[in-house]
Image (cartoon, rainbow, N blue to C red; front, side, top):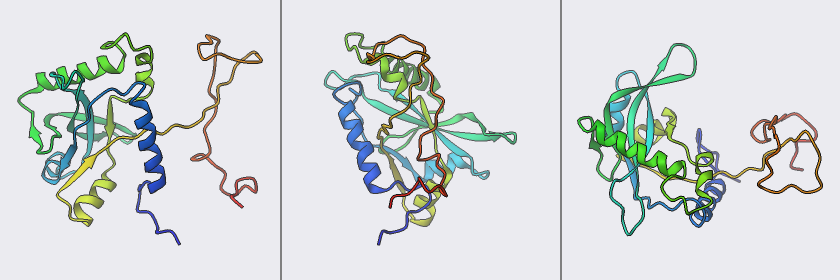
Length: 215
């Protein structure tokens, strides 16, 4: 009997799959060093505040390389819900660098912005043009993550942990590419017009359908 998952918990097998996928990308597009990225409970308390704001994690690169490779880093800011929609706006200060011991970088906003710009140059394939796959990074790697408060509440409040580590994985799902003309075989560099009018199942499924069964 499987143990019930907590809210937003990723099944171990799925987490393993995501991590194996990013290991494959290390030989293709992900040529960064990733040191431990840690969110400390006190940093979370400061950024979430009395209103329990959500946290946005921006990805950046260190200015100095290590062994000839760029090093990934991350910065956290507070994000508040604007209006009744799903738009979250950032507070510019405070901003924390999520190292092993979190550092308040509120007085170093220029350094933060330069780090983010450097990562986005890498993300857009501009830092190593000799890699023909670098141009695909912008379709794989995001600029930032808006964290969900439930996971952090579980870790810091329910489990009484003093820190949480942020790691990365890649979810690879087969998507539909819908073309307005037919070819016996298509090459990856086919420049035809292509659409994607579909949502994969899961997560968008008809749970009551007789066709949607594992038995």
